Length: 310
View 1 (cartoon, rainbow, N blue to C red):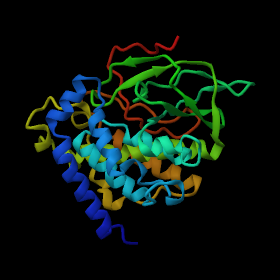
View 2: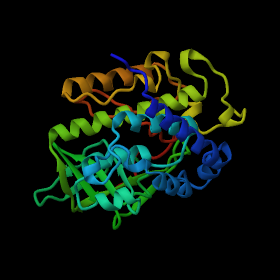
View 3: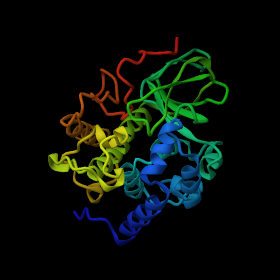
View 4: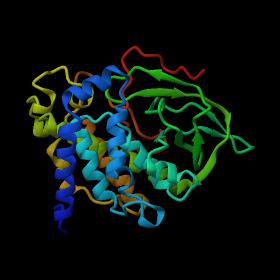
């Protein structure tokens, strides 16, 4: 099999890199980190570029390119520490593309995020619970989250959210406590499994880009030009090392279609990432005790409260 990027994918990668060279410099990233971890101007520009619709089918209003192209973009976001919710938005759009929210999500007037920890589904269809600190949970309008053996979407606009300081200041975190909140089912147990595995793969691609940019592939420890020679760069670069066995985006293939294939890919990526903790920061599990662990990439500051949902 040929895992090299096609000429179109190489062109996409180069265009994304050129765009981020101009719009996501270390100064931009540090300014966004100081303001909470979300660069709305950069996000708006990405919407205008069509990035958020890259993996959505043309019939649903997207560009219809696919998972490899999404991986190409996400790797570049990791390289530049882009403080935007493209990872989470693309994951959510996978199950929301044919829903009433799709138009707003594709045009950028709505932002969606995802969580991996299951909440409780009540008899009336509502949900109760508090996932892990949700990446971009403070800015998102919609949350896709497992509820038992179903995948549901929750409207966050009327829900109180509590920001949580994170080790990675280039991504905002928030606790989202829900008490009998209306929820709409968007998938069954297989969709939950795919949701978790897709999250693992998307985060792994971003972390791969960050690790390569910082020179950690193969155990190197040089400082990247993008961080302007400073070792005080935000955490996605300074706290992750990625072994060369993960290769580069040319080795990224669409997520396997079978449950076993998805799980094997998720386990392998996590095992590779967990071999390289930096500065004593342990990567949390993307999953549950009954499922293979997966990385979230959401690191809460040491000493932070366990939960502010109660």
